Length: 246
Ligand SMILES: [Zn+2]
Image (cartoon, rainbow, N blue to C red; front, side, top):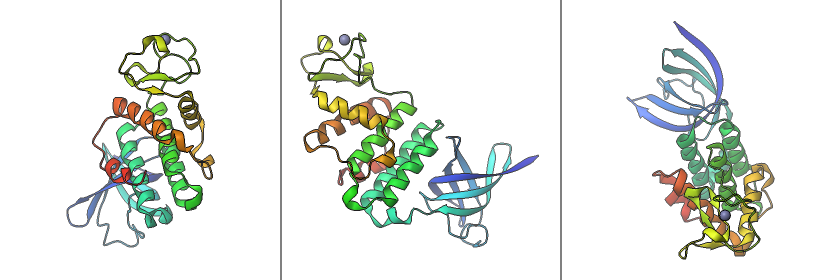
């Protein structure tokens, strides 16, 4: 018995399989990633009219037999063409796709990825702070994956964090009050913590026109990287490509 259903799907990765077949990994609204077999992609304009480009949103007609999902046809919902004209935006979107593959299944992930693509495809250059977009995306992703850093109370003893430079311990879950700091700990200014909290709470759609202040840009990025390296480590191709633009 097979069943048939339609679903929106955000294409995260496309892998060639035989001459004209493809395996397509798509993020669906439930926050799961489905692997779809798409047959004769290049040959059927009717079934896959616009092609199956990574980082496009499509409406898939899917048949399922046991654990195999077959994409019978697909219609474009949004190509996000604008982000394909800029390497930096394209790399950040690709980074998002790699992270999504890493943490799925995850409730809210589909909406987060859509918000990232909407932001990257529709914000003019002078209103887009790419580093802020990446850090906000990362903070939301960490929270969804169950690794939201502790930013208000000490990750060790739970006491409220004082407004002074404090150490960060990603493996312990966040910032610590001064009494647990070791000599070698890097200290972060209170302003960095405030920005991390704002990034964790903001909707990506509210970012156009907002920039991270110059003095805290690199410390904020470093703090976010510390958490990612601890909890979501993995070989991501896009990280190196993106580094040149941040
Ligand atoms: Zn403490």
